[in-house]
Length: 260
Length: 330
Image (cartoon, rainbow over all chains, first blue to last red; front, side):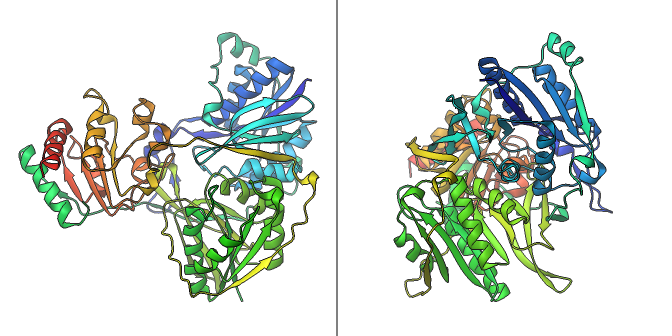
């Protein structure tokens, strides 16, 4: 049975360069100049899972993202991996959306895009890391959701079986389609775009929709009121000398502090 | 009276999940600040004993939802039941322990209630802003080098999940009294569109890291020495547990369950010894609440020494064998 699969992706600052993010001391605003953007790594696993399902069952894989104009790059990368279509939800009114508002916009975009059987997402993004959007967009689309998916198999008759990781094991979850499922890293190894894939992507369509898809633009109930550099500094005592002396000194101090 | 509501998770082997006890304790503290009461939502197959336990841990009221179909976590009906109870009670604040199940339930409930939700909070307190009590929700951002304060000024309830291991559990008070309110769940078979069939246990043989009193954790500085062996031997000599940084996990030296930091575990042991790790924030954020922190790293300027109580800037291959020898000969 061919499936219409929608993969929700997000462009994020590269976590390898998070240490370059600074705070403007005057305004308190975040400065992230020179921090490159990438597709959220877990989202690539979601794209891969969609492509694997399409290879087995047939169907169409669409990727959708909400973000600034440059987020189109992440859609292009997904098309080069093998996705069929891209949707960019881009409007100044969407800026600063929290997870609830993001889920609202994405669910409206998914509805506008057409029929869907399966929505796949990365379990969380490396920047916000809330993992909240998948259950929330499922609620707005009135479909079931499963998060923390580490294995996914379609069981025919519009249903899927998911291994859903929990502390100390996993849950076996049977879910009817359409459903929204967010995946963990272990679910697959994602492919990289090939030269052929990149060339093929140039022929594929990316549609851009603004606020008209979701009017009025949803408000975010949560607000960032302050960002500050975390300081958990302690007053360190450095122990110096020959290794035997330092080792003895350390153990003596730890016993005095009742840490041993 | 203002209310704070906590959703409580059961352990599979019975009893209440630590993350929920930590959350309940925070709720009782906050209730003291706003002169409010604490309610707990408990959903499960049979959980009367746990409901009574919740009262000893500070709940004034427990909504007890018992149904054989709800023995395992079921995302659709759990969210529906919790949202219905919350909508009727109209609390100021809803708190949920940020386990993998809590992180699944909370957003769906928040969406049903059309309110704000903040994930993985490490601190929560009340501040009066423009004459109104607001919950200040503090979360680490960008790998933990920044802290972000979030509020939900105009929507109620204010909802937050709490990062497990960051806050302290309360203690049981056998003399406390409270009210258990049985709730008959209005659910049908069609509410189980996602149906949990079973929980499959994959037992860790070792002590969970969160319970360890002593942890020895290694980083990329172990590279090119004898691999992770010095850390394992030091942990054994200290009768502690082994942990590591993300690079140590990437090298295959430790399993994911032993990884400390933003994308791994948060721990608060009595003693945390960090070996061969420079101290990136996304790592140190996982053990800032340890009682005593010891850092051993070759680079005297490494940021790890900024957050340590005791530091040794030397080659770990010189220091660790001496430590083990003296520990074994004592």
